[in-house]
Length: 269
Length: 310
Ligand SMILES: Cc1ncc(C[n+]2csc(CCOP(=O)(O)OP(=O)(O)O)c2C)c(N)n1
Ligand SMILES: [Mg+2]
Image (cartoon, rainbow over all chains, first blue to last red):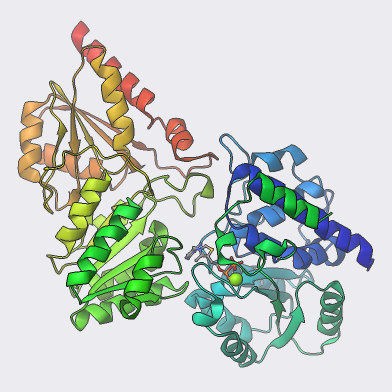
């Protein structure tokens, strides 16, 4: 793992996202910025995912359950030339190619999301199919901490806990905020953690902006000798990387104006 | 519509202490004031719509007047069985308020579009379905809702819609009415697509065509008396709705028309049973669907000219 390469990549992705969000005047920039290190680690270090193999039957699959952060994934697909770079600028625009929530009409996207609480059960089904077919590929799924309010998430966890899905890794983007409150006001984080621990799966808590943490966790996962799925609760910051966007509910909705974009890009040089 | 809704709800809550509001982790900049004013009667239920809907049922069972609020798919399709079993079957006092009718959420994509919600809600027994077309109707309907104790679905657009109703127009649940009187042609609309119909009407006027515009604030129960009259009075009927062709206003009107064996020429301008993949804002998507003012104008003009030739 080359830390510098990954860190530069993360910075580039953040800049790409900010420019597109500003020009599209679209929402959810905070939700995108909190998952950049996780996605960068998966797509540039962990999974082999590139133009030549992204359709292979034996590929690892990534399911972004919090589909409102679509642009984070679209930016990676553009960076990897799986979609045309010029498509990024059409995000959310009239006649554009990229829909606001994650859409499987976009090359490289496995399944559409946008209504919360759907991605994890789908990822569970994929992992189960791989297990049935005795394939070795992994399934990664990323859900929001607010998304953990949904009953379907827990229905899924109950199934996962009971079915030895070692090939499934679930990330929880614990950025402490959801749509109209801090998560703590709805489901306090320590309670969420206790609930997750009670599933008796492989449970890890990490700094979701730290590549070394991510790497160490995956070392632990691959050396674990049980057949259980893994849950990684990643402590993150909503709006990470742009000081005035960090930990602010309003950046779930707002898009940066010209001045704010300039300042944001300045911080990410 | 959203701001009008919340303003009127605040007003009602001041005098009606039974009103309780549940939101599905939404309402930033909309509910801020309500929340501050009535902290004991406002609950952010989190992103958990099925629970939210059945909690509403429980509250209503104990005498509360519950308003449940989220983006349309999340308070309709997501929790349809909770609505059916827990609210409609026991006939409880819950108003389900969905925001983002049709393609109001434009570029957000299919998960946020609301083009099958009327079909879902209309198919539930005991459910009243309200589809106001402008902020005036929203205001009146919120106050109307507070007089009834039955399951109700209130379908809102987004924000900053124009008002087309006269300030003294009576709005009663169960009634439809004229926005504009006309000759030979009646355009029947529900929801904020009225904007397009009104522009189309202007264009038609300059061609000496004067269609009536009719609003349907209550889609279920349908105002049969009123529409029987419309079918007798106007030969040409255009039904325009930002919803799938199946299960919406069109179906209700077609059924009534057939039941009474009228011989109108009816055209239904709606969405053709397909998911919308077009990326763009509300206006742009409407255009791609033939639901914009110009497309409506052209369709009606063509029909009228064909008729003139015969
Ligand atoms: C079923 C459903 N309910 C509500 C919404 C509206 N919504 C979109 S994002 C969001 C908050 C999500 O919070 P979280 O999962 O913590 O993700 P974050 O934005 O913090 O990354 C909500 C309520 C939705 N998309 N789906
Ligand atoms: Mg969150």
